[in-house]
Length: 149
Image (cartoon, rainbow, N blue to C red; front, side, top):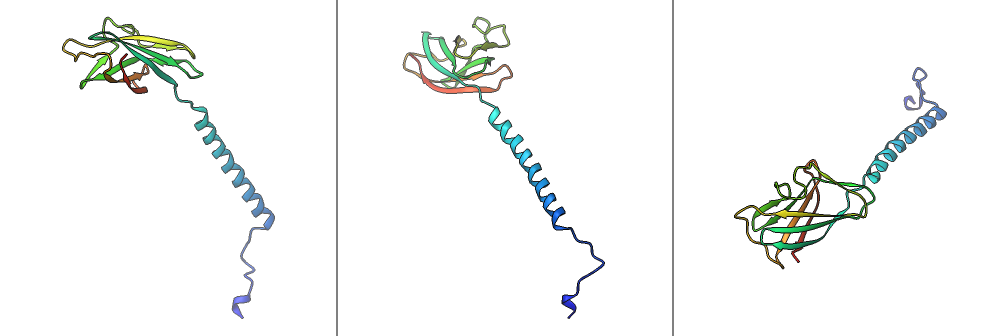
């Protein structure tokens, strides 16, 4: 009959205190999850698209960027990858040259002239290229595989 004995010296948690502890733990966990989910939903990615890439001459393209989001997007650079080489909009004679960035408000467009360096492969109408839009910190905002028109 030793198994049925109650240990009188041992303290136990009353059902009321146990219930209160469970409620407190649940509320704290809910607040933590709510905060985490709210931060995830609140971070909206930059929404820019490349409308078109227009052929100007064999070493110059005009890239039209549109902000379709609800916030201003900071454009720091536009790169074109063609023929294994990169073209950069930050050259001395390009539109963004000298500026660290250009702010693009919602619903607006930006046309950036991108020039290839001497010895860059010629780009023609109908060629497929990759356009990469970067922010002022060099982070990729948008990338598109697009045909030159």
